[in-house]
Image (cartoon, rainbow over all chains, first blue to last red; front, top):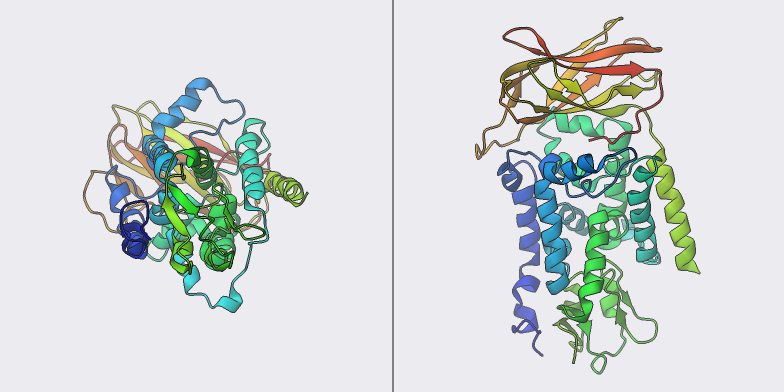
Length: 280
Length: 160
């Protein structure tokens, strides 16, 4: 069987080189090299590259201040727009292959022995995720407080990589909020089965990207199941890092959680899973 | 039903997380200028902690350029340390100010900077006011002053 991108499944570039791409993302975006962010004289995702804060309205804010947030974080705006646009057509490749904030969590989780891993797959991820996103957007607007910077994976992960070299970045973790962020990264990342519970539950960019993935599912390329080939064996569900595959009844993929990591494709004994456009 | 319960639980947890502040850190923002600069808002911290961390971010307004030293002023004197946020491996792709010997060096108009200020009171602070003041090293004039209040309402603004 051929994948819909024109290459045999086993030799698809994105499937074959995913680990390498994950590592490249880390090297290019995160300290100590952080080459991409240094192009704009930055050292991490805060400031010009912040992808999380510009779209959040805060109590007492003027429209000018809101729009200035877009200007201040222009690289973050460009990044988010690019992510959402490409996801509409190709699926969540940012999340599955490129995100340097998620990569260390997933790769790190592979180093943790299975008995120590926490399984969150009984949690209905979209319910949790969009409750969090709702509060993320509403709480600052009505003055309750903010989840933006206080619980930020895009702030914590780069600083985790920089902390061994920089006292300033180490300082980030030597306070209550830093400890909480580190705990979340470990608890929902490194020690989570699949390493993607943080992405699946608490990442606002992941939540927006998942919406884009769901909206574009009718015309874009996605991981899909060919029902006539599927035997409902459940092997795909066991390896899915975002617990997007439901094997109760006919096996289905929830496009509100799926990303094209292709791990399910690799284990499907009947090659019923493919990446492509919807069947006509 | 399970989905609805999880939604409600997650929303309640998120609201609590958004509302709660430990009060041991805050974000101070300002704009540096030759006329003395402008703080975006004062920092308010609860008293009684043995360590406070402030992330201080700012922008340089034209025509200021030079080097700036940051000090924490107030009575009784408050021990502090300032840490920079420079690239670990500076690839030299773009000019940027750097932090050296407690001083932001090579500031140019429209530059942005981030420094971390760690305050370590030797005895528990009660209510009081301190200032984070940036001095131009060439003229010793204040180019930005950010008030820090202890013992007041906690700062609920975002942090870095």
